[in-house]
Structure formats: structure tokens, C-alpha cells
Length: 442
Image 1 (tube, one colour):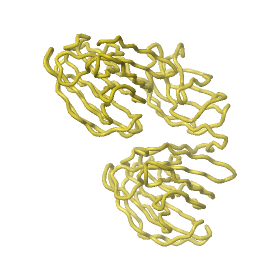
Image 2 (cartoon, rainbow, N blue to C red):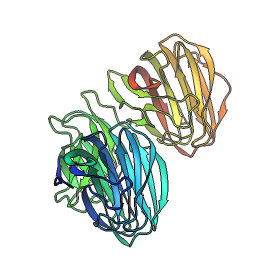
Image 3 (tube, helix red, strand yellow):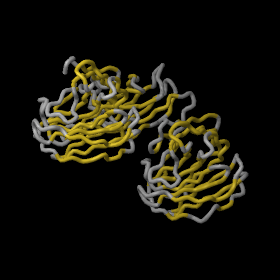
Image 4 (cartoon, rainbow, N blue to C red):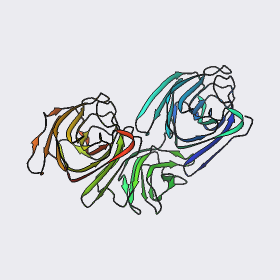
């Protein structure tokens, strides 16, 4: 190594320091490893928040057969603004390597083991994962999994920070958040987190919001009730389970003086670059969203203020204003799931006109069409009857005109309906205001 590395943990984040020559085309690795044992199949996921060191520093997640430097391994890591992997398939052999694509930190990584098959994934938001590759490497049943850092030199240390670190195995699943009672809230508000793997009692476990612990009111293996404390800031909300401080998936939570009313929730859908938000005050929803939108894409990027809808129903809203890039989108949407590639129908304002996009099958490229010119404020209505979706527009909310032809799209019985906004770019936000918003059954 040349210089001794280190690893520590505070406020939900791991910090690793490592020197050494790394893992590129060597028969003997050298790096610092923060690890735990793994027996059989399993997975590790983490967000690499930052990496400081030489221009050749490595930091990422690793599974290796032993702690010997020549051990079989697979390593998924950031190097020189890209995601790379190295692997060694025979003890003491020279490692091989390949680039997996460019990356901007912070960035999510996931590495899974199924027998001797290792699969790598990347994500910009922990929701939408892209498979980066698969490798077959013979390893023993019992291996080691963790966070690896090297400065690719023996003369100085690289420093990397990781958060949302999660390890799951066949015998011990990682905690999972399945739902929250609210995604916005003010200081002092209560939120119920529902999921699995939280542990029967709290012990040393925590719930973190943007890296800081919140107040715990009640704890069980499937439900945690929290209070948003003074000083809390918007960010990732997750459950960290002791003693290993294994983190759940993260849900973005916005601390605001203008929380959304029940049953409304909000989240970014797809890769957006900048986190969006949704607030409510005096009968008006304000929604901010980045992302590339829904035009001719297989994965949407937008911010969605939504509620669940079972069966037939209708959403109505008046779009009062839209500020952002000239290609920003804002309107009403019904989508099958909250994943970026879900089937959907979206009726929206774009460039002083009403447009629609639809995706008829999960992961398919969306299609679109112009419907009419419009001047804001403008009313929109989208109705579902079985698998038939009908769009309407109005200038006064009383006299409605059907827009285009009804669209037939197969979706599940349970869908999501609400307000969607995208700035059609990942570097800035569009902001839209809606009033007279309603969701009704058949």
C-alpha cells in the first residue's frame, strides 16, 4: 500500500481512504477495503458521493473470494469520470478490465451474485437501474463484499465517501421501504414508513433524512413512525438497520412549510439530473421538475405529484402558469407504475400548445401528437374507462372539447394519476402551478 488506509462511519456515510496500485491489470491488488462476509448469493448497492485523490483513483463496490491480494474478484468502480470494472477469474492471475460508460457523481452502483454469475448495474436515482454487464467467475460459497478505494499510487491516499450502503443475502435481506404516508412535510409533522426488514425493535437503528437522524415515535419490523425534527432539510429518507447500519432504498422527502395534502405524494420519475418538488398552498399545487420529459423516449424523466387510482376515473386541473425552458412540459398524467418506462397517457402544455404522449407497452418508445394551440391558464381533463383514455380541453372549466381521438392502452387495474412537469433538460427545473385539481371515480 505504501500508506495505510482507513475506514469510518458517521451520519449515515462511510468514508474510505486508500493508497496502493489498485486493480488494473495486476496479479496482486492493493487498496483499502471496508467489508463484511457474504455467504452464497447476495447483492451490494451503494451511492458513491465523492472521490478525491489522484486523477487515477478508484472507488466502488467489490466482491472478492478472500482478503489475499491475488484473490478472485469483481470490482465495479468510478475512475476518471467513468464506470469501470476489473475481474480476476483465477487466483494470482492478472486482472482484466473494461469501461462501462461515463458517470457524474454522485452515482449509484449495484453488484449482485447468483452462483458464479455476477451482474453489475448503475443508476442516477436508485429507482431506474441499467444493467452494465455480467461476468462468470468461480468463487467459494463464502466471500467478502464491501467498499474499495485506491489512489493508484503508494505515495498518497484517495478519499471516497459512500452512503445508502446496502448488503442483502439469501439469509439476511436488506431493509426495503415500500411506501411512505407523505413525501412532503413541515417541521413537526409525522410520517409513517412502511416496508420490511426494519427489525422488531429499534435498538441502534436509525431513520436518516438527508444524512441526519430524525425523531422515532414507533418502531416495528414493518412500520416506523417518525417526526420531522427542527433543522431537518430535504433529501433522501431511508431506514438504516443496526448493527451493520444496512440501509434501505431511499425515498426523496421535501421539508416544506407547504406540504401536499393527503392522499397526494410526489417523486421524480426516471433520471432527472436535479431533484424536483411538489408543494400545496391556498388551493394551488406548485410542481418543479427537471428530466428529459416524455417525447419519443423509452424512459421518462419528470417530477410527478400523484395519488393511486383503482379502475376507472378522471383527473381535472387548470394549468395556471409554466416557467422554464422553451420546451418545458406540464400537465396531467395517468401511468401504470412509477418506473420511468411505464405505460402512460400524458396531456400537457408544450410551447403554447396542448400535446399528448403515450406509451403502449412497458419500456417502449413513447409516441406523441399535437392537439391544439392554447393560452394559459388552460383547463385539462383526462378520463379512463377500462383501457380507453379520452382527453379534453376547456377555457372555463364548464364547456369542454374532446381533444384528438381516444387512446386505447392496456394498463393494470391499479394506476397512478396526477400532475407531471419536466424542463426537458437535466440541468435546470421548470416550475408549474395548477389549481382546481380533482380526481374522481367513474
